[in-house]
Length: 287
Image (cartoon, rainbow, N blue to C red; front, side, top):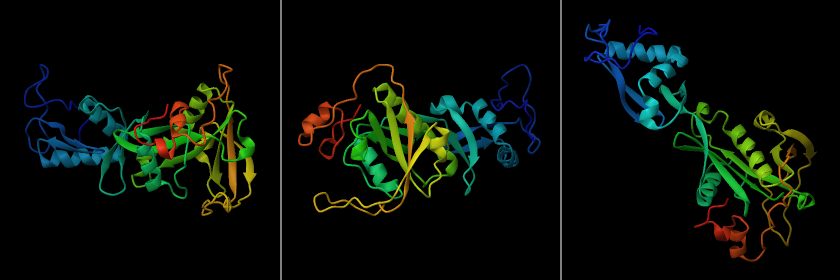
């Protein structure tokens, strides 16, 4: 077994005045390096098959040691990513779980992501700003913030997280903490823009664990109702389910007024006010 003092950078050429220890399996100098990395998967190269099997077993038994080993093998400089954990994907073996990072995504990417991955809601027509979260180079989730859907809450310095979507077609370990990170960013960005409060809704059958972790509070229980009318046709697929409204009070540093409401008729005006609408999706990235 490779001990804590093992130097994974050792090869046939000594790195110090001490020769590399002989391999317990083949007798040659111990040798291990990263052979290939693709996405969240990786491959090691060793001096023999016996050492390779032993390292794989030790990594599976002790993920903390596995992360330390890969860091000593310079995996972070090689990839430009910060390694969070080495985890079992529940299927074929160990995978690389990179540190989550907030980043930019185009409006088109956001729309396609929600259309593909959201469990029960469609794409909103318009919103004010959005953000994405990545695990390495993998887009894990998006959040979009706009005006409150309920007209009674509009014009009161309140914005709403209209959609928060995390993909479910990847191992659960890769998306750990992604939703909480997005909820936290939405509140911080709304506060920076001068809003007084931010709200969102969850279905009654959803626990809201990520909202609690991000400092949100339960505000009200909303009875399910349909929004369809002859003048404003809407889908009622998700409307009849009771919901919980969550909120978080904000404390903006400035007393500036919230951004003006978008024009109802002009896509050009929507670009000037920082909105993303159906007509301004392509070629425009919101603030």
